[in-house]
Length: 184
Image (cartoon, rainbow, N blue to C red; front, side, top):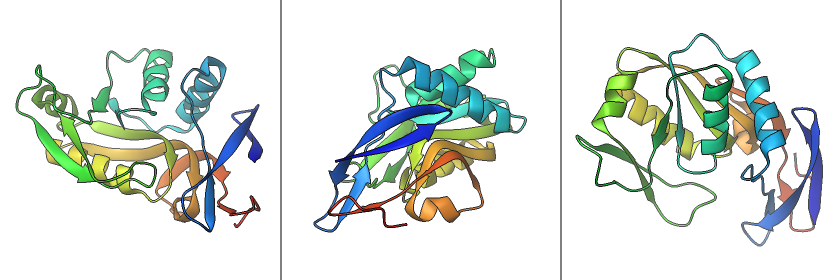
């Protein structure tokens, strides 16, 4: 089963994946789709407020945040890592339980990332916001760093995230029943 939709003016087919006996979600994977990544970055930047730096969580948000930074000629962006790396110093972290990942994860930032965000206007970027768990973890990291969150942006929002007034997204992604019928 697949769900066809237009995203940033481009049509894509998303495979439906079961997350329980009664519920399917449409899998949106931006990896490898340069045309879509460029188009989504362009459309999100049109809606972005004034900001100093962009942040995303490792992994599916990386091509998007890179392309947004590239299009606006930004000198850098920040990635919250899923594991502490040897090069990292003055590490700080938060725990997150995402709908698309088994178990609890921890997101890590380096002290130099804190310096990039401290007192700065920060946009949190993700590919899809569903439950808001990953978003919440990123918010906590930005707050720990002393950054000022000016926007929360994603390509797609699904479920309860669609009704949140604090998220800017390009398209609504419905949830599906076990037979692939749209629920919302």
